[in-house]
Length: 233
Image (cartoon, rainbow, N blue to C red; front, top):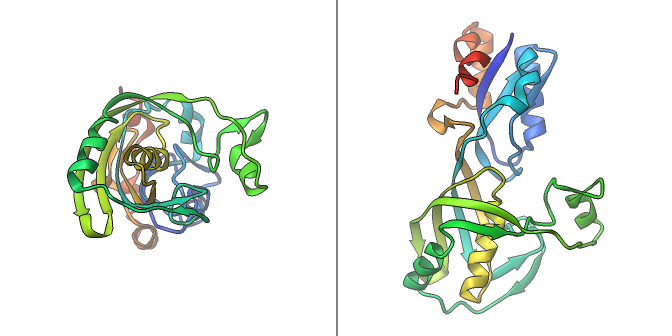
């Protein structure tokens, strides 16, 4: 069995565990995924099956798309709600202020990767250093935010939901934190859903529970995308 399965990764599961679950359900000897999603995040996770894992680096990265929720006035060490709270600040920003700040991040921007990330520095993953309480200087990266917009708002409680289309390598947690700093009150990401990755949209993905049912009914292969199709571009 060779090809790509598009999984809607559930919350609370690492991308590695999700790919391992697929491996057990399909019976293939090897699986891999094309881009890590944080455990708290849900959404598009292309999982490579069997011989398709050899083509991981050749797959077109394309832009990615996300829907993220955030809360103003809170700062954590992980930049998301799962982390340790470092600060709580007064929020004076209005919806209009938020929308104005949001648009200042449209286009090509510089972004510093978070400490809690899988990036290696001097051969060590940053998150491993972060867990030891060690923070190191990180070089900023150039990323592109092709589209960013407000899709939900609870102005009274300082809670907002945004839609973002961006280049591969963009950290939405960092984007949220930077928006909070722009407003002077800080911000923390409270939820994240990836709606597009590697050119694949969320509406083509299947849940792990559905995958188990398909495997039992013998209809699983109908959902497998041939690697040739993915490499067409």
